Length: 195
View 1: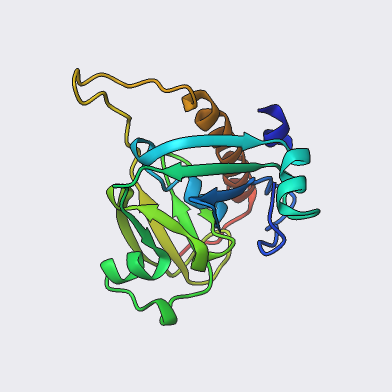
View 2 (view 1 turned 90 degrees about the horizontal axis):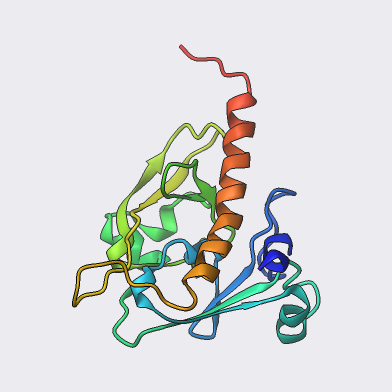
């Protein structure tokens, strides 16, 4: 798991900066925006496989997976929205949206999507979406997508259901958490003029 934390990215996704160590993410065999990983409901995941950078480069090509990769297969009944579908749900016209979009989750600052057109989100995790006019990090209009955290429950007993790959999911999530925390630190260190 440490290998992934240190290294996966697809050449079609340009790295945002040196803080960005996101793995390449595939869902049902299709490459998606890496932040789709955070926007999927754990209960929808059937299989979850982590590839080291070496394995990912062999599979996806040199330079495409320098930080490793995550392969996710969803259960058949899983319902997801694509970028245009989630925009439509919140009455936004995809063609008129600003190019920059940020995913907000948990208590951390938003993370910018690298390729909104390939972003997918579980229907059950969509909470809200809107245009933020004064983003502290980017100083331009940004689409903000808020997701809610959903705990996996055992439907028969109402308790949390542990699965073999849940530890892997948590380990990959730490990569995004670390990036988010670092971005919050950088944002908070910038002087702001208000008023």
